[in-house]
Image 1 (cartoon, one colour):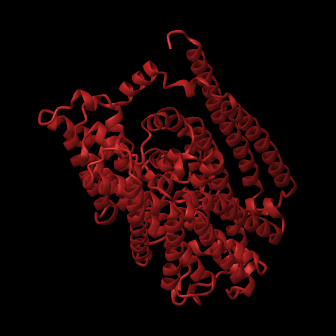
Image 2: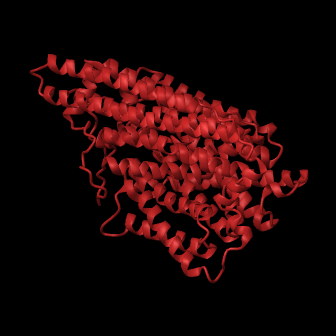
Image 3: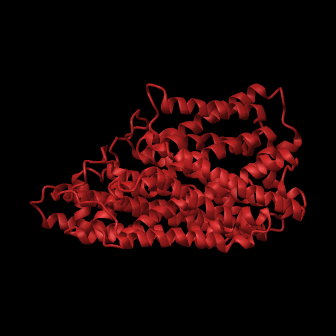
Length: 618
């Protein structure tokens, strides 16, 4: 095995990085003059089409945490970690059929405005406050990740803390200047950069390894990374082991939370011109999300094969070398000048697309749910006609708050690295918020027994319980199950305390009018489901096409590996290769069934919705 290469960046790499950073700042300046009102700053004037909205959501959710963490996690746990992508498609009915029309009918700025209508101002402020805290922690982790990557890629030549500060300042600057429109369009550019960087890295590794894709897979088989059931069928572990069930369930709860109650994502749907555009953007987001997830998972296996024949340093400046650093280290040592700069620019793109969105959404939540609600008494921004002077004052306040939040995120990011690997940090800090936040909305939408006091007590206690078992208890919670257990604990506590406090503050008829059932009944009476009656058949057809492609591609790939294994009878992993070929064929069949069932259900749902639209009773 060759000695570890000296990590360094060429002048051309630095040029690529600087050009990218200056370009993002220029986009913020480009949209500065078009920000006349808070509606422009927070919602881009509700003028965005489905394509930039969908790509923006993908870029936002795929921060550097994912861009570095997913390849590292697949090197450590194997392809079982990739199966979390399946949960994205399981979220589609919940998001597009329940939450999207529900939010769209209210025409709000903040998702948490709904909670005051259903409960009271206490629940609204609690949920909005939890979201702001949640996102500050998440953004801090996202800033830390690429800064650490650049530090590792240059062999420690670039100091970590100054890099964090520089990245935080740049992301804050263009967000403050350009508002939501700048955020969305820079996210589109950043999606292209991070996707392109991933493809370049995979291509160069395949070219560097003798045998290409087959050699990468054979190495993964030898390392035991292709087993879909590494931990058996168990659910819970007190360490960082993973199981197939755990990955899918945790991914489903986490994605549903991100897509339905996270202001960062929901605010994107508010910028869409129509409900149909919002749904199309979500479909685009789902397929792009899965494509990125699968690509990064394969990149992890490719890096595993590359470092099987190329040594990595044992430590950098006295710090033990981590799996999280393999990707940027490979970029700095193995790629031609300029290409490494593109890869590192992709890391910055993944970060900035998350930080800019988070800062803008936190600013929106604070301005709408605290500043305007408590200062002016506005239950909803849309309930009043803004004066030009008030809107201008609020726009200045929003920009000042953006700078303050950006500075806070940057300071917190300087201390995140003390908590462990990137993917575990995300699981511990970020997912602990997701479950309780999701439960607050579920209680309001789907049960008439929920009370404001019971929901507040249950949500706060559930977060305290989860954080205790995550960080302080002798038996800690596995990082995958943080969001799921948080959801279960919050559901039990919120419902239980609502039953206990129901006699103290019974729900009024006006509050119960904001349950999902009541609102859906109202839509039908007022014809608010017209958009659903015009639903397209294309999502179902896309799923059926994906089912066929999965089966064909899986069968061809399995047959190729089987033939390779038969020809290499003396190869130590040949027997396992045949087993893995059968496993690939089986996985392709499962994928075909999953996509096929989803496609059929979507087609039936569309047909039923169109039939209702033609019915005189509707």
